[in-house]
Length: 286
Image 1: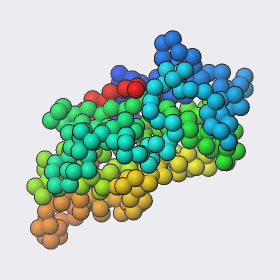
Image 2 (image 1 turned 45 degrees about the vertical axis):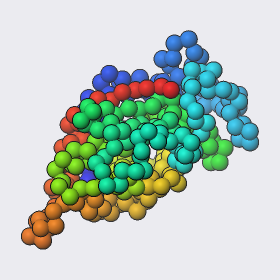
Image 3 (image 1 turned 90 degrees about the vertical axis):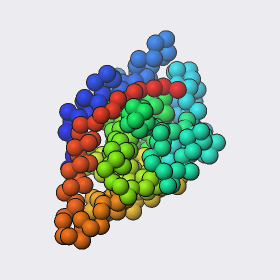
Image 4 (image 1 turned 180 degrees about the vertical axis):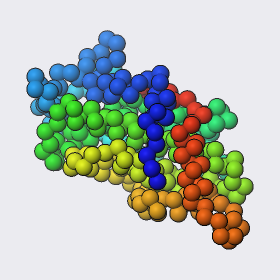
């Protein structure tokens, strides 16, 4: 497998540029009338959490004071969401023998969602949720790992937080397109989500540098415990991922029996669709 072109990411985020999203997540810039997080950093551009977070009691402020009205309080809400936050109107768990649901990853405890192509296709990033998930992971790392974060490092991690969600939802776009091409494909919620998480993590791996704080951040961001999502660890290797993907999308066995190597075909379509996505990206708050 290989990394996707930066152009495809840039094109997807053309209405909400990457830098603008990072500024909103890291500094809370862009919420008219609400304070920013800029004073969380000292004159040397180092993060100081003494006034905003206590390692024993948690945050010392209300997120709503900064214009964030998410129901979430921690990144834990997204890696192990409570049933009360799921959107049962979409019947997420009841579509094992149907096509991909109209909306995937719906509900209030989600970082992003995908609405399938005949709706038409829309990827939505929920910035309030991403912001809370991101910062509570940062607080956790400071308390448990004693990291000293600079603005540069925080911005670097915020970019990964955006990409993590974007790649996840782009995988659902690929599956939606693939379902039109595979006669025997059957949607399976657990496998679909496990592969989406695995794909996201593999692609994020191309974006990261060899720094322990990045690895530790990603370990928490991908520490899913909810059904389906948690199984991504079974496919975290590129070979494991492709093998399961070929099985899931139900490539005609006759083609394989004839000796045709299908991996390049599957990878080619995967990259083709995601590098040329026929979708819109929306940025929503609460």
